[in-house]
Every structure is written in C-alpha cells, then in structure tokens.
Image: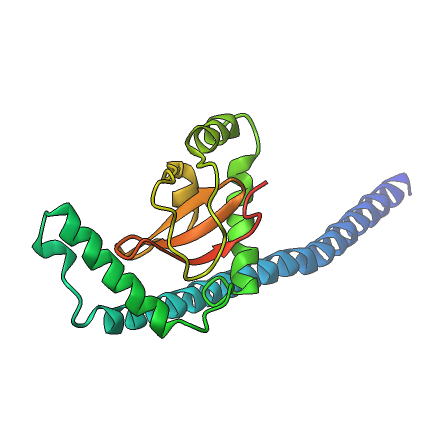
Length: 203
C-alpha cells in the first residue's frame, strides 16, 4: 500500500514539475518573441535611416555636380590663388542652387535623433574622457551655424575622434563631419560650405 502511495506521489510531483516548466516555457516565449520583434523593428528603422540619409546625400551631390559645371577643377592646379578661386566658384554655384536650403534638409528630424543615439555611447564611461579632451583642444572659437554659409576662413577645423566617426554613416570624399562644441556640422570640403548641422548632437 505504501509503495502505491509513493509511486502516486512521485507521479504527482513529476506532473506538477512538468506543468511548472510548461508554464515557464509559455511565459518565456512571448518575452523572447517581444525581444526578437524589437530587434527586427530596430533593424528596419536603421535600414530606413541609412537609405533616407544616403538619398539626401546623393541629392546634394547632384546639386554640387551641377554647380561645378564650368567652374575650375580643384585637381588641376596647386596654385593657392587658383584653388581659392575654384573653391569660391563652386561655393557660389552651390549657394545659388540651394538658395532655399534650410536646416534639416539633409539632417531631417529622425536622422538627427538617430545620430544622437549613435554618438551618445561614445560620450559616456571612462573611455569618453579622451574623446572629450580631443574635442575641447581642437574647438574653434566661433563658427556660425548656418546652412549654405562659408566655413570661417581663419577658424580651425577640429579633429573628430575616430570612435565618433566610426559610429556614423560613412560619407563621400566631397563631404565630412566636424564637431563644433556640442554641434555636428556637415561640411563640403571643396566648397568650404556648411551643408547642414545638428544642434546639440553630443552631450
């Protein structure tokens, strides 16, 4: 009789344990599915961000190409005066074709939000101190944040730490990122123009 009770007890314990494991498994599945769904959603958002940003850069390069028609080529001379004249001609052409340009034409609100998210981790923790020191040491005194404006001729071009550059989408050779204080600007290297900017891109 005791043996029967013992067997019955063991079976009941096994069934109870199985039920608990099943319940835990069922509870874990929605959590795993939620995590996977979030990861997939973020991947879709990142892909959309990359595509949108690339399209905006490509549109700018088309304008730049049109502006450069008939202007002296920067690669055909090493004469500083001629290089300066070529830069000025290209800049004037771009400014003319982008006369209605506004902040956010390239760095649209969602793109700005993504850039801040990408840069934020690099400005935190122990390793961020070197990054902050580099930004502080190279910071120019004053650069007006204005789309289509010439980058001040005598203003320093601050070094952008490599870890920040690696966090951001790559750019064609005609463009570059610069960080002025807490603001990120997109600069045309050949025309020396501020193409767009993100205020308070870093903290």
